[in-house]
Length: 465
Image (cartoon, rainbow, N blue to C red; front, side, top):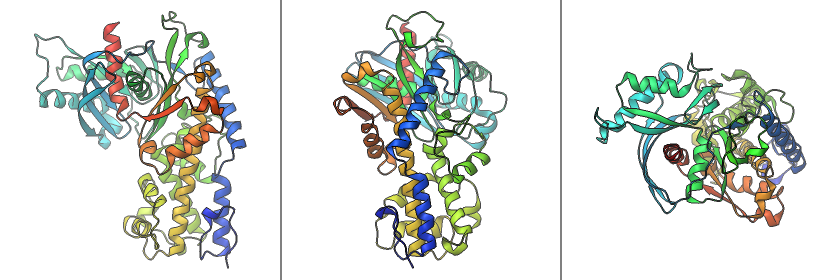
């Protein structure tokens, strides 16, 4: 017996009434109305204002000490280290003076040992490898190379090239680093290898993305990461930053690192938490932290889906109640599996069958099982994209005066680039909250590898200063 679903997209052909009712319950939990989103946006803006007024608030609103916009006419070669959630890149970036940049880089995967113990020594070793492989290692008679350092974790920045680590996120947890200057930790590791390299600028990855976008298009106002984790940076009027104690910049603007992944982490009061989100948070390495990030980022969506799959299996509503050793392990469902499932339109959902039976090692899935797995992927992905618009709208409406002119938003990250329909749903949802005549002024552009190029640009600005 089947029942009628809330939404035709989530009707499971051949499902029992109990299975369809469970899917309908998930749809009610994960599909968010504009009215619900409006309330979240309002609270997001309130938390931003709170962070602008004083330090120590949930939304950090950290001044980056970047007070200029690149013109797009700068030329020369500059260097950067780009540390992300899973990879590290060392780059040489060449600016062409026409808003374009080319980069030569090497990519290194972070080993587990680096994530938990030897991070800064590992980074220094990668810098050494890059310089030696490209025969550009400075000798004792040459000036040191200045490098920008993209560090995509919360820091309390104290100058253009210093900042203390607030907390680890995105799966890193290296002891003895919280509360210490990450530039000093890296500089010491470079000195231990005898490298003539100076860390000239500490750059959050979103600040780097913004600066990279601004070099290509000076109207850029926001840089956003929608990837393994999420965060944003934007140009704020210095007069709006009540807690700023530094000199008033000539430009009148300061780039702020919002650290928006932490939104609603203290109270769990406005985000649409489900039991599956609570379970993920409770078992994560940073419970009661990064609540917003955990709902919209690539590191976490697969785990939310895994929790849903097991919840349904435990009720014998999916996979005939079966699981596997692989499926029982946390983080075994990669978000890329959801991406593949969301676009599987084959008659027998063969891609999803491969994921369930071969990758997750649960044999004999039925077509109903595969349909339910696809619906889970669609629901988790759509909620992520809709929630992602919250931060965009709240930040854009923070400076409404700018919305009457062209505004570019540079976005980097695997969720924006690769998750099916993420870009469309996010942009469409933003349009529901910005007046049409102003929304048409906004462009969203993929700032591919923006965090690395942007760090080199910030190093250039620091060198000019």
